[in-house]
Image (cartoon, rainbow, N blue to C red):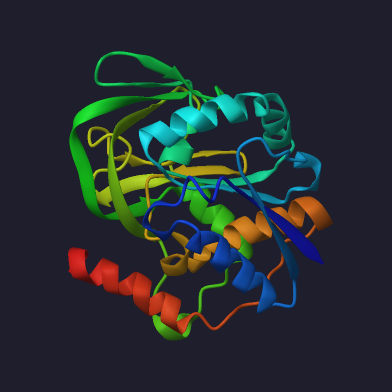
Length: 258
């Protein structure tokens, strides 16, 4: 088996080590004997979505997002069709915001998004920064349990996601979209409705940097399992020894919730 990961704009979108998410996906494939190919794509380069199993978009500044909207807009129709066909996407912060309808600046100017998902982002007057812990949505938890087997030796059920956020944009989900979960530490999408991130089919958007996946192995395996299931019909994954990953996750939970 082999998975192809497209890392879009790694030279422009890489705040807080976001590329570490791609490294985690590749490592967890290799540890299981699954071949993996990483294709790094930047401005003006072509993307063949039919060959992609996972797309990753990290976070960046407002200036870089403006450049990317212009570049990605030419590909948005193909990307949307692939999403409807079950393509797996992980998008972080600025990459997450790009999927929406628009980003409204502090001066009231609306910068169009890719209009793939029904949400919008408005610039706030306060930076939302700090550690984040969210309680995972029930449906997402069910999806994770299909691919990730909890190791009872470590005493962690992985009902949470942990990470670090730093953004001023406030994202508001439209009707029919569900967040990844409920914020129990930090700010999340907008600091108002306790939501964090978004899920639509196999698309996941979040403000959690860190990078996200090293401390959340259950989320990493969800992405891999979904991609394998789409490509090969089965996403069954061999359980890995996640003692270090579990300890890193639990250290954050224990620091803020106990």
